[in-house]
Image (cartoon, rainbow, N blue to C red; front, top):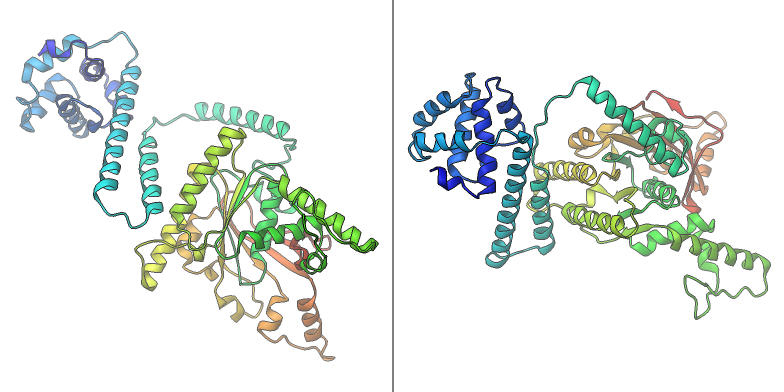
Length: 500
């Protein structure tokens, strides 16, 4: 049996792990090994069965040594099949005890991952050739996730002391400060990507990698416009962002952004006379020698100039599955890392209720579907290490309350979303409810008229309520929503309130 071990590096690594376990009277070697390896990681069936016996002995609370493992192998009726005493003696003879044992563990683990990877590739190719594929995008996305899962196989690391962890925390804080200085950001408590709004940063401390942020509102309150403003604030710092619009076309989204950056309303943009030969670099407009029109033309050109300079990506495929979105984000992240040496700063999905998931039907299934989608959004955020905003529509329940203030329970199928989200924002626009439900009048009958005027006004007050914040305080942030220009600005009149 000893001859079978010669010139086989992997065998020697596996054998050295087992031999060191047998030689180690303290039991530390066994503990170290089980933190990183499972029996299936051993390629030779004999080593696999021996390590399985080691684990079994350990779980029974006994000392793991040659004697106890031999007894366990016999009880499992595999003693003879692994080669008996002859193979166990060969292990003891061939064990390398000079090199750090961790090197053997790493080698075996990496070889095991490679074998799992190659087997998975074979299975994927076999399925592609021999089974009907109903949805190619879903098949590719699922295959990519299965491959990624192999690389992220569970590694049960040893518990760390606070002394060790504290050193890591200090190193992280130093790097964080260096990143702030590099990106021109002051260390003013903001530890993530700045939102662009100082009042919001007081609560959020910026957008953080791996966070799932939910923004809920009734239809037409302004959640899409708010999300675009948040993305714009990040993009204008030249951090790439991507907006998944499942409801509106990319051109419609671009027009809203043009309203925002040019300061021109859609009516003003549409009223101009555009001449043949116009391009995004040079928009030709017949001004008729009119100064007002010429001024609008200049604003429009500056708007286009800013738009094309922004690292802002739009995906407007309707009926997208979460797997499609995740696959596209991973691909874009890889491209940005390779070409621009950057990472995606923020992702937004408009909106959660339009994402489809195969294999679901009925109300109960819809609730499970939303739960699956929510979990996948959070998983994508963590895998890509990017903050992800998910917009969602609220139910009519808020309209039944006297003050109409939205609550978490207004999110449709909210259980899983509430659990997965790191932050939940609610948009409350008082003038929205003027048309939905009559307002009470005062003695002069003026309240209804005032509310109606605000509803018809291009300017609305919007209360952005941070109703859940996993790592910070909650509160209310007053905004002014300029509907014509798709602009959200923090109100100068009111101040943010803490403690919702």
